[in-house]
Amino acid sequence: NAGVTQTPKFRILKIGQSMTLQCAQDMNHNYMYWYRQDPGMGLKLIYYSVGAGITDKGEVPNGYNVSRSTTEDFPLRLELAAPSQTSVYFCASSYSESYEQYFGPGTRLTVT
Amino acid sequence: GIQVEQSPPDLILQEGANSTLRCNFSDSVNNLQWFHQNPWGQLINLFYIPSGTKQNGRLSATTVATERYSLLYISSSQTTDSGVYFCAVERVGNFNKFYFGSGTKLNVKP
Picture 1: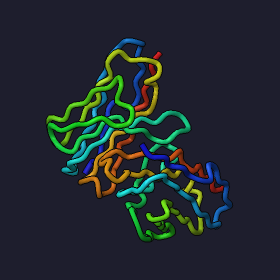
Picture 2: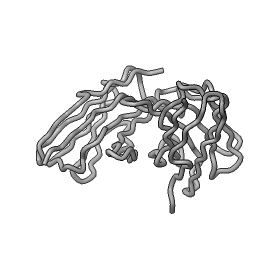
Picture 3: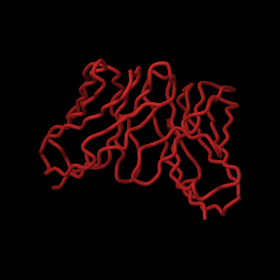
C-alpha cells in the first residue's frame, strides 16, 4: 500500500493564479481531511469529507474548495491564490472519526 | 472551537533521558490523538487515546478526559525521537473537526 499520496511536493504560484492539490489514498478509508501548517504552528483543518459526495468546512475554509467524487481522491482547489495561503498542506485519511489519522507527505506552497 | 495547549513548547534532552509532554484542552472531547512530526516534516500517528492508557514500546500515553488533559511519556529517549509532538482533539458534538495544539519541539542530543 502506498498509503496517502500528495502531489505536487512543491509549488510556487503567483498572486491570483489557481491550482489543485491532489490527494489520494489506497486504504479504502471513508474519511479524508485537508490541513494547512504555517511555520512553527500546529495544523489547522481546512475541509473534510466523510465519504464520496460529502464534504464540510473546517476551521479555515476561506479561499479553498474541495470535491470528493471517489473514495480514493480528495483534491483541494485554490482559487485566486494570495500570499496568506503560503503554507504546507497536508492531506490525511482515516477509516472513521474514531480511528487514527494517516498523513501524506505534504505539499509546500509559496504564493508570491 | 476548543483551546488546546501543549507544554513545554521546547525541550532538550540528553539521549537516554525520560520526558513527559502535556496536552490540556478546554472542553470535553471524544477523540484525542498524538502525532510526531519528524525533522523532514512527516507526520506519524503515535496514539489514538480519547481516554485511558496505552503503551507502544518506549512511548506511552494517558488521557484523563474528566480533567481535560493528556500526557505523552517518552522513556530512554533516542536521537530519532527528535521532532515536534502534537496532540489533536475532536470536541464532543463537533464531529470530525480536529484541533491541534502548537506542539512540543523535542531535541534529543547524543
